[in-house]
Length: 459
Image (cartoon, rainbow, N blue to C red; front, side, top):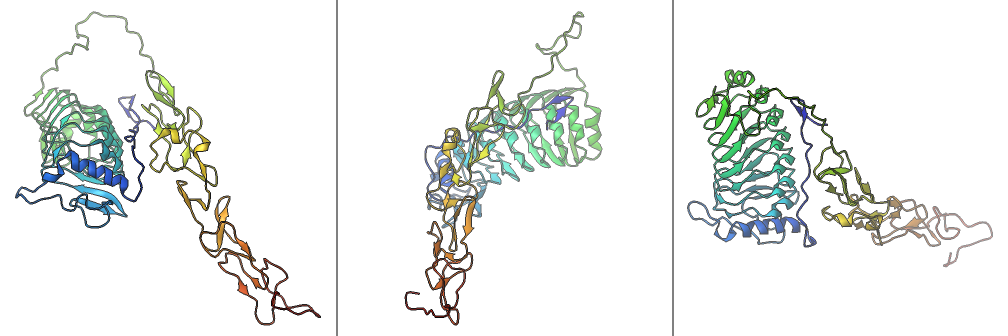
């Protein structure tokens, strides 16, 4: 569904493709190791230290898996995956590498009080598990805020760009971060332009919104008045805002501890007419009706018109700017797919990270298991356990009278004469007592010999 501001539909969140892998992960944590190794190199890891001069690169790159062995300083793990980077005040010096997007399970990233430079990579939009912190406060980061930031829809607090050297406008995609409740900070940079009206979507915001000490301009959007839960710091000071403070925004001041709007702005001054705006005294002209916008639907992406998603990619939204690669165990064999289909039963697709579209564009990309059955994600094969065999829909129990004594058995074997088994058996039990034998192989139970018959060693 599309949200609207002043009757205009906003853009549906889109997905940034992961950087292309030039290697195949070969062990648990390999992908995360590559990401952190690239970060270590790009930020001069050999020189990380605290203000007192203590080395802060403890155990970094000491093991192939950052979540096994000795703990790497500032790296938090859960269930064998990197979920936290807390690298506050350790002299990070350099730029963010694109490989940061490989940390798919990251929930918190703290990089404040360092000397990071350069622009933020668009791959930061791949960190969709982020939910509590993305903190760049007090660095020297330049360039614009990537629009892909709007993909971090789980983020609920601490999106902090304060005290850097960033510029450009605030992306309208900020309005997609509707889980945000606190600490949205853009202050002390060189941002320009007007605040996006899409900020009005963040109706759960409660405290700390700072854009002070920039060059934001134009009228303050009335949609900020929808933040009716806001109670703490609302600071728009030291910019170039003009016109009157909207009534809806002014109403927030009665509940807000620090409400800074007029200081350092041009409030109550008429906003200057921009070159792209017609003067208010212009002669009356005939205005043609604005055509309704045309949106590209599912299965398409917008590229100077609506273009079909290529094979191996899909899009299930309206107004998407790109099509995503099918996920693990999935393929899209037709152009214009709005979703991907699972590999057929008994087959798998081994592109575990869902990155290369050409590995998802044909049913032949789904491989038959030579032994065993596909795992639950259909990304590889696994052997069935004792007492089971590979079936058309996964591992299935051995029938009565058959057995499988190890996980390497592809097909259950029949019990030999003189032995029987129930279903799901790992072994066959010898006949004993009055029930002396079986009438052939593959028996589910033992029988007594008929009259005039006896059992010899061969059954």
